[in-house]
Image 1 (cartoon, rainbow, N blue to C red):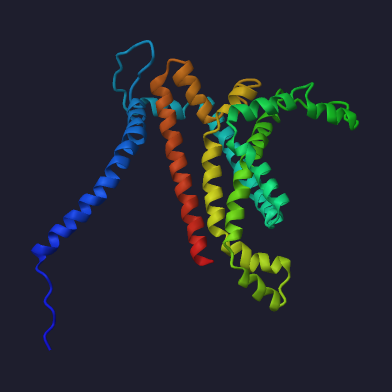
Image 2 (image 1 turned 90 degrees about the vertical axis):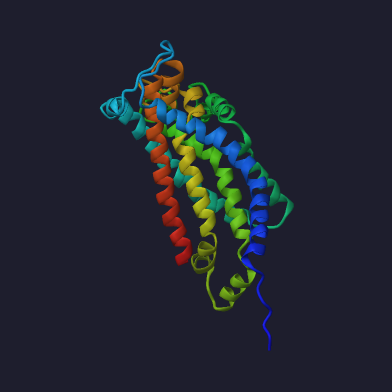
Length: 305
């Protein structure tokens, strides 16, 4: 029996080239824009970190790692880095936990629950400046919160934004409030993807609510946990608008300043563009490393589950 002969490679080559040309027609414009709007600014910023550039002297010279050495010897840098880590840890943990709990409560099919989902998601679409202005009126000494506490019998209400010991936690709480709706929506999407048959089988086997959550719900929403954790990690590290509006880095000297806030202060308002670029480069490296590690660990957990 004769087997059909394969076409020669010379005939297959044009089809491969045609597919490559078709793919490049779609991919190249996007890659060009990504490189122009993302990679080029990042490369420019990293390059500036190796110079002594400032706004008032257009001529800059190459200083190598000198800016990074000064940065690591600067106590203010370590302070803003510590503040950033504190905010990031709070923002990663609190909205994740509360968002999952609220998503479990809102995982119902009715008009009321759909309206509640919209309510929780509303702060996410607001800008950080709008959210900060709203909360500034709530947390000021004569604001709504202190009036409620006074009516409840609290004689000395705390200075939510003026007390150096709690101002950073107040900002963290506001950012948690804004990001909570994002976590709720992502977890609701994950819960909607859980097959109902698994719950029915677990109920038949006599599993209670907590057992069903641990054996069915938690493994099936692993990808939602990964998305929320990485997004919250990045949001915590790049917090800027909330600090600018609420405390402007104070009270005191940089008690609430984040690394993103300090970069803008030195690079835009100040004249130390090279120093700010070095700081932004370190910030970028930290975000990339932490995001990569967290993503790898959580994705490994998804496979294991």
